[in-house]
Length: 253
Image: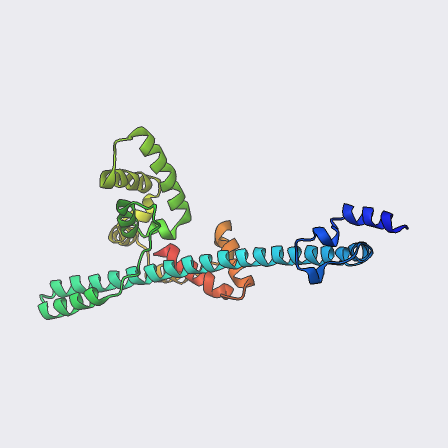
């Protein structure tokens, strides 16, 4: 190939004569070297760039999956913390009622101090969440613990908003709560009523123990809960038995 032909090919590949070169003079190459590098080095660089792009894409996917997993684990722990708080509060209030029944004011005051010092889990809110919604969510623990009830509440909220566009604040959320109670009455029944019904129905002590002692399993969880459990176990951040146990404790609260 003649020198002129080499220069034509080099210019087609981006080469410029030394007099027209605007970069660092030390890195300028003659036409023949430029063409040679174009055939030998550039393909290698392109292949390396391609591999780097694939590696970065895989890394980004892995990071995204990790972030999602951490969020899932964080949400789960928040639910268990809230559930533990509600159980402790319920126990203390029951003890307080017993103190009132026994006319023991000292014990009542002592229990009241325990309630005041009981650390309540912080319910974080997104910037777009209204204060009324944050307050309502804090008063209705089921919204964070039961996916089916939360989904139903969201659907009803949209319907109520369309039917009553001027309804805002507490009256709006009270109406949503009423609709949820109609759909899930068992979740809002008075536990004392259940106890009375059981006594009237003639249930024996053995039957009570059998019902309380029955453990629910992984297979009885809904598909979303199973998927969450599988992801956490696969990532090695939680044991399957631990998740199943905490899941059903939340469901039974």
